[in-house]
Length: 354
Image 1: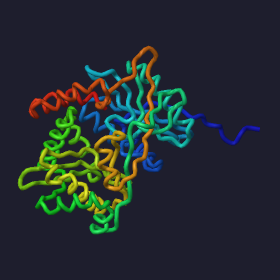
Image 2 (image 1 turned 180 degrees about the vertical axis):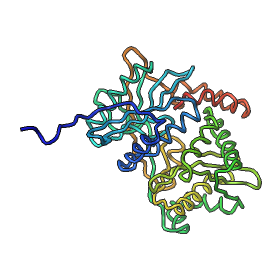
Image 3 (image 1 turned 90 degrees about the vertical axis):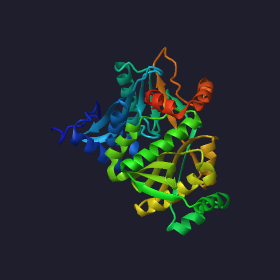
Image 4 (image 1 turned 180 degrees about the horizontal axis):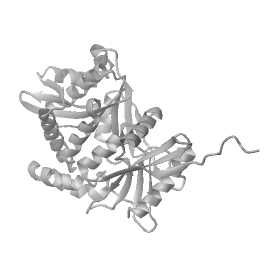
């Protein structure tokens, strides 16, 4: 007697991100599987639009239903080895799958795609990787915690020493705005560009921030702190499944003595609650770094992040870690560049730092 239905095998295929129906289907899976904003097709497309790096991805299916998804960015640069990143310019976005074996299958197919695209490596931000991949769980930590019920409770939830810094900032007569208009975008880029130059890091192209704001719509905005008419600190935040995720933020030199960053993050917590968020995701930081300690001072507990990579036989592992010894002298030199020069050449370099 014939079986009532044929057993379906799981398949993996490269997606067409130009197909709106396919993108919608993938986004639905991301939400159902509790994925990150860096798993969403609009993130991939914003990165492609903003940096010129190619967006793609692999979908696993069984019986017409998605069982796994691996968002990918093909990153190429004259200064760094060509690589396949999951997910490009994000801090999460590794294989999202219903079963571990599906996640590993996606990784294996990704290595085949890497070879076809002349990429020397595949890099995952999170997710399960095959046992023979290089896994690192001590380089970065994430910080997230619940938001309080109102503004006063939010202030009291901050540990005493850090709360004192916030209160000092609140007494400085600083003004806070939230929006996505040209004035907001220009203020954000000015603050962010100066901040990363001071840290010795090339700035991303402004069109990347514009593209993210465009693709995410109401799920992204900019909060800026002003000293008079001058922006002194600003952050671009993503809102995803009840979590506020301040992603690209920074301040000018004067932000430190004005406590503008303290005001910025406190006001963002209050603003996020008004958008219906219940969680504040402070993002990742290099373990033991200044930002790592800053976030701990706010009362957030560090959670180690797991990253994994595969390197093609005969190739060296890609190194784009700005804190590594390889780049220490370059970082010191970059800090001394005039801001105008850094802003002109930085985006050309940074587009390869996914």
